[in-house]
Amino acid sequence: MPPEKSPQSPVPSGQKVLISNDHGEKLVGLLHQTSSKKLVILCHGFRATKDDSILVDLAAAFTAEGISAFRFDFSGNGESEGEFQYGSYRKEAADLRSVVLYFSEQKYDIIALIGHSKGGNAALLYASQYSDVPSIVNISGRFALERGIDGRLGKNFMQRINKDGYIDVKNRKGPLQHFGCYAGEFEYRVSKASLEDRLSTDTLLSSRAISKDCRVLTIHGAKDEIVPAEDAVQFAANIPNHELRIIAEANHRYTGHEQELTSLVLGFVMSRLRSTSPLRPKL
Image 1 (cartoon, rainbow, N blue to C red):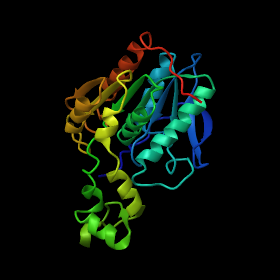
Image 2: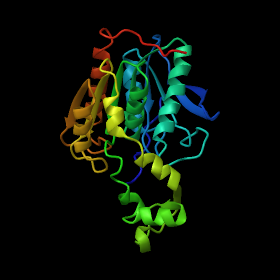
Image 3: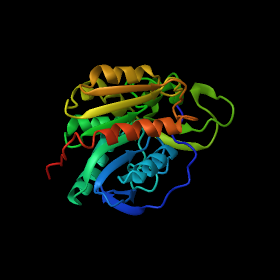
């Protein structure tokens, strides 16, 4: 289970914005302001940042259509404060809540939350708790959170984490070592609590809790090598108001299919502007 980040794209300029989360940590983001107060919020995936090429491309596409865009680092990632945590699904949804409230107080009309991979999970989890954003786009999110762990932590990860209380993850440079560990540089530590956070996050329950008034689009690559496309089908089966688009030859990063991905996201959000009324969080 490698990181979901990619080589960075040239980053268009934006206004740096600092937002405090519930833990008093500063979340750092870039606001791409147009003449419109309509805003999309873009969420990165596991071990990625606001400068992920998918988010950069989407920000450029929306601003070209006159829609403002905000991309930010979740706590413990990129420039934002806080300690990186392996699980943190609920905390990232709470970070997203802080961002939504901030821009709502600034009188923005938040028309969509858009997330890639783990960022898609954060957007969906947010929608299961709050009904103040009319559209969600889930790009390659993972439905079965119990899967994909042993690919990064090793086959016997539960015994090791129960014994030591943590697992230090290293990059895969170097020969295979004992206990499923790889030689290489230290990347991050997985605590028992953060692993339990992931395993206790109920995607089925949260998917079914999303209001039918919230429109959800899931996009997935049929050749995704990190999250199987069957996870997208499970989202489609359990979210009340859902559209599913599978891109036949696309991988997790949509390599060679970036334009098709951007076009699907843009088309979904823009087509709903006239049919949705502004919903603002209750402050």
